Length: 270
Ligand SMILES: Nc1ncnc2c1ncn2[C@@H]1O[C@H](COP(=O)(O)OP(=O)(O)OP(=O)(O)O)[C@@H](O)[C@H]1O
Ligand SMILES: [Mg+2]
Image (cartoon, rainbow, N blue to C red; front, side):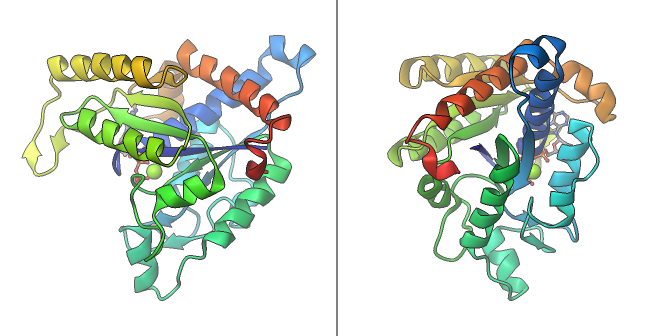
């Protein structure tokens, strides 16, 4: 019924981990005993816009299912949760061109629609950042604007994140795309680009404080979620993920979904 687009300030920023964690939090809420009596269970599935760098079933979808604690679903085997998978780990427009199999955005839209027929919430993970070309002529952000999906933006505390985050938010604002939430990924790589990079607490703490203040001033409705480090084993990592902020947002997404039932604003999500 509702589609949320999970984007990030860059590739490898943690969109897959954030999407899996969110889906898991939504599933857990649905299963919580206090929710099962009074409310209708909310069903959730994840989808990947385009997967590059693998063959067969999208590796991001496999990771989502791992984190959700469920096996691959029929919709995964049918290709609905990722209609386009390309071998070359590159931008979708390039990877698809190299295989002479061009991306038709309408195919993705129809797949999402089929998912929304069976699930209350679809978490659609993008490929790379918002300005990544989906085809030679369409940017990811234009596809999102056209569909009217609210965005959940993944960022981090690494050096450069403030600028990348504000640029992403400006681009969303310019296209009147709602910014539903910002997920701050506490995990950081040991290496950043070609140079050795050690996370610096002064920078990570200030980045978080700065971005929170910016959102409070310019986007007061936007949710803030901290995504913790997920340990090597997913089962182990999930224990640390179940923070109340994630659960709060999951609850808010359910309310949002309910509100969308009666709202014209998001009718194009169906
Ligand atoms: N919270 C986290 N805890 C532990 N490891 C993480 C976390 N976030 C990211 N990582 C590591 O960083 C890698 C990249 O993260 P992820 O796959 O979520 O990025 P992405 O934004 O989805 O990338 P893509 O644009 O390729 O889809 C992961 O494979 C994992 O090793
Ligand atoms: Mg990913």
